[in-house]
Image 1 (cartoon, rainbow, N blue to C red):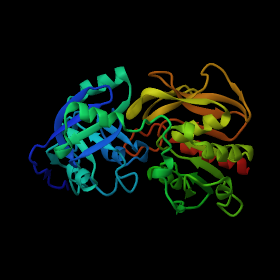
Image 2: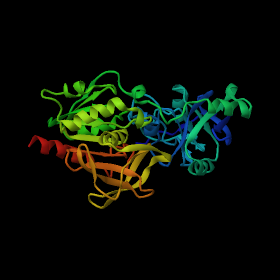
Image 3: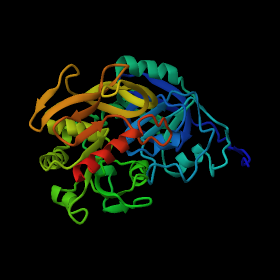
Length: 386
């Protein structure tokens, strides 16, 4: 039975301004908490899954604009969050839904943003904003509402004082502080040590579905911590998604080189893909405006299959697409590529049991075209055991 629709109470319209680093200003009304916030201006092209987006730790210190015109129509529930809190620095929507209508909804999105102190803005032309960011690139921004509103020059000066995303070391700010275990569902087949760099809740769940017991470790875990997992060490090692600049993650890269040196099966997602690239000797770079959404076409070059995939990354690996590369850990090839812009979306080690992808095969909001990658990780561990 469908639950009755919840009508969001209309607050008094509080004026708000969205100020970009290059001086462009969009004016609208406050949405969520009233005040001020700063972060990197990015956009997400997904039409569904806003609750997963808000609670994805990879969005830490980013102000996310949704390109879908109406947001909030399914409300908020307690089953879909990918972590314990909302991580976005701010939220930008065009037309907030006045009604939350879903059988699992317990409150409106506006109420949830207010409760967690997330400053947002509504009523702006998000199409114009998206076109602007596509032309000018991601940049620093700020949302100001209520008493935080000031003259344009003062708000712009505040935005330009905010830290840049390049050089930002953020994974430790979102990772768990303590080790926890996600048990296997059904018969336990393998044990995996997962480094939490901003892990989403669905990731260990996808592994647990395949009989994998996942030990989630803090971002600052050492190689000794990793190999203390399990009776005789882990059957596999996983590096998660996460926020910030991969060029800052020297400690995690050192751990990964130890994993490769021991030939332990490895799987990385998103930030984990970038760190595998660094461990192999490739560089990383910042994309102009990044990939964020659930409709990105990627080709698996190992099979020729094209997948529609979920993305959330502003950095990428600088590896050649047209040849097999020689690295300190053997031969490596680009296994997946984005069909929109030829960005590297996956790496495959040919002489090591290791691979990674830049996108999100665990995406709870879908699509699920790439769920087979967890089976590929399972097969790597199975092969190593044999």
